[in-house]
Length: 265
Image (cartoon, rainbow, N blue to C red; front, side, top):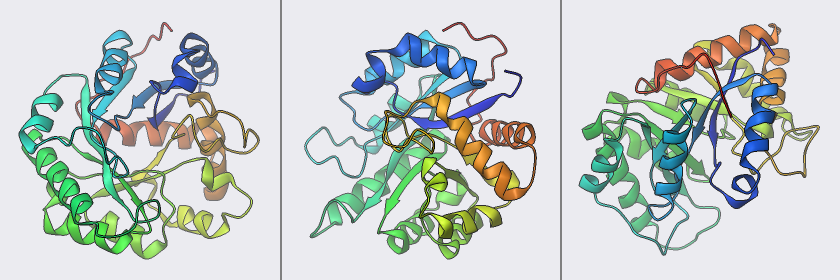
């Protein structure tokens, strides 16, 4: 397909996708997906993420520890910076705060988040932010740690317009996943209509959150096309324009990523 989309956030190394990777990548190519960012969530599994980025020129990597991870290695700022020095690593994350899945004293999660922001500043690479039921603290820490100096993306955005506006004021991009296609997501669609088009990204968060009409199935990068179609419809612009704009936005944000013209899954 002529349309060139970018899946700005997925997890190709997760078992549901890794076990069928060749077909997953073929499906993506056939759906017009030209570039993919495979996001790290643990240090232990980061070598798998990095290997994919080195094996395929259209796949990029990030390094970080998801806020829900409690038992794996918790890296220092220096460790994160060292891992991010690889040329295929384009971002720090995903990182952030999640008060939905974990309760109690969240100081440890907040401190980890601060280390990731400091590492991003030291490495000169943008952040990939996960936030759930923690919007106020997320924005506060981003401000406090000077995250506006590197920017980043609020991934799989599900918050209100006030949170989006605060993130935009910090120079962040807003990325929408398959959730924006869900029947009960009208409030989120209202936010999606307001985000400046030059700050929009699209993602799958595969293998999770498959968009309509694939809801309930294993998600994959090919399905980012449905997210883009929804956003294009909301903004009354052609899909091709939305695809080109969000891909351009991706490379504006992730400056270490280099676009490729030929894909060979």
